[in-house]
Amino acid sequence: VLEDMMTAYENAPGLQLADRLLSAMLAGEKAGGDSRHTRSAALKVYDTEDYPAVDLRVDWSVEPIKDLSRVLAATREDDYATFFARLPTRDRPGRA
Image (cartoon, rainbow, N blue to C red; front, side, top):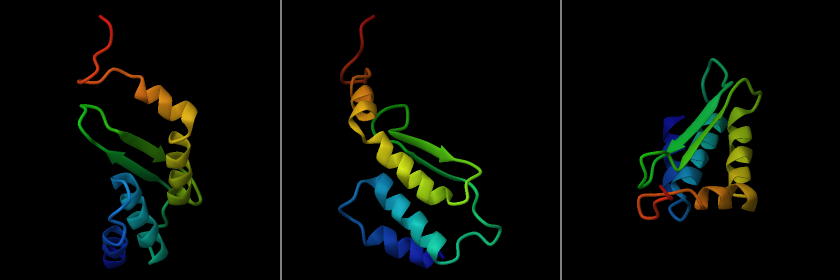
């Protein structure tokens, strides 16, 4: 499982970190995953801010990693993505 996860991660150098990690998670699941059966999946990625750039979780799902993939894709839709692009950052502070 771990070897397949690492191979998937290494074979996706052009993808964003969240996508590379998700690719590794999907490969691990395909290779046999957790013997207790996976029911939850989470993805948290930090960038330059104090808060995570990606902070997603799916619980009590039959296919949590696939569901996590769908949630990640939804966060990149214009309505959601542009909302976060307008939030204050260190480089772009909000109004006091």
